[in-house]
Length: 113
Image (cartoon, rainbow, N blue to C red):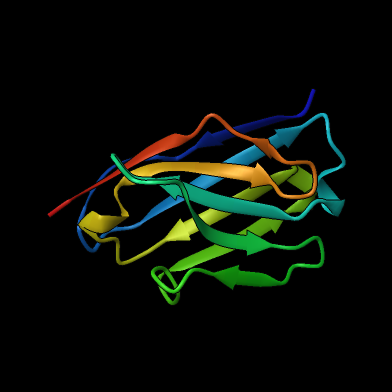
């Protein structure tokens, strides 16, 4: 069974940075389109960013210019570099294999004001 394991979440002050990682296993990672999503308390899960197998990226307007998605196929890992964090970025962040529709368990990001 496909496994996606996120890490790197934590508590950070507004304006700070975090880098999330999502390690994939039991899948051919390099051919999969990958995405990051987030869910804030009391809100629906929302899309954050996508990276295709070819390395093309797309971002939600709310994070454009602050977040960067990247991948390392040799390490079967997708990353989300988050800069200039805001309190409204507080959420559980999930990675997803878009091609296979598998989700990780999530990692908590809390941004204090």
